[in-house]
Image (cartoon, rainbow, N blue to C red; front, side, top):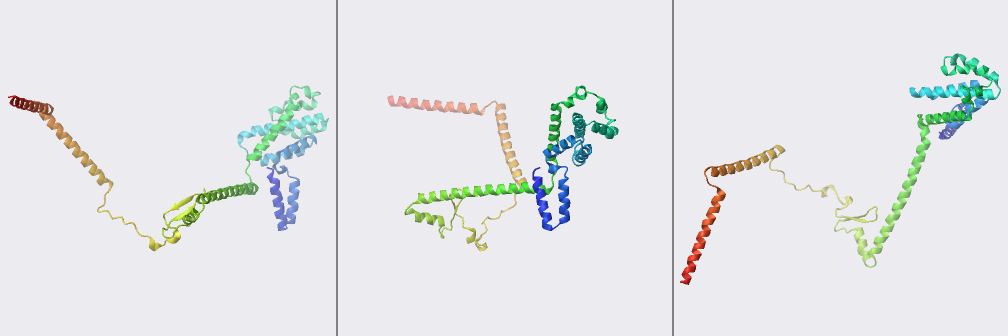
Length: 336
């Protein structure tokens, strides 16, 4: 959230513009004691490390309470375990730094102030032996906290946790003003580039059309571009530089008096879908009835012992015999 500093400057400028001097003083004082450090995670981690190395237990507890009230308490319930783990690790890191700095009084102060709170937590039972341990860096319960790997892991985990929260937390409307302004400016620049490219392409294609017409044909080409008044045609140049011809007159040449209704004759009667379906069903019924009638006649012929197919074949054979007989008699007459 680096843009928060920019927004702070805008608010300060507005306060100066309105002449709110007392408000400006209070605003500057609040900015100096800002515990969120303009929501910059690196600054918050530096502040926590500074309080630990300065052995400022009160300031450390106050900063953590601020983070808990403004950030951690708004998280979902399943994040409570992670928040508690980070808090206990920060307190243990405070004891490790105090021991390495030979600040035994700070260790005694720590347990004096926080014993009522920590005595009910099981993970702190062994840590009450910490002030009386001669070599805690060699003790199994405390040795891991003296390693650089554990300390670096703690700071990295805390940094990532705060970064995730700051990125996901809802922002006020004024915080989106800069990002939206940058987006609008970027879109305007892109639109300007696209318009210039489109204008260049149109000019190149228009010049190609003029050069293609050439010489004596230029006059006729110009007349075609301008459009004759007698034909009422409308020629326009499209976005890609081509000429679009339209036989429809332009809207400026039309009026309401020129519009004529279409000559569509009214229907003789009203026909609905049910009437059409009824006609189709009647035609289907007629076809079925004629087919049934043909089947009845076929069955009747079969029952009478005759066949229409065989009857036709026998009749054809009789005609062929007669023709062959007539031809043979004529041949005998010619020979005789």
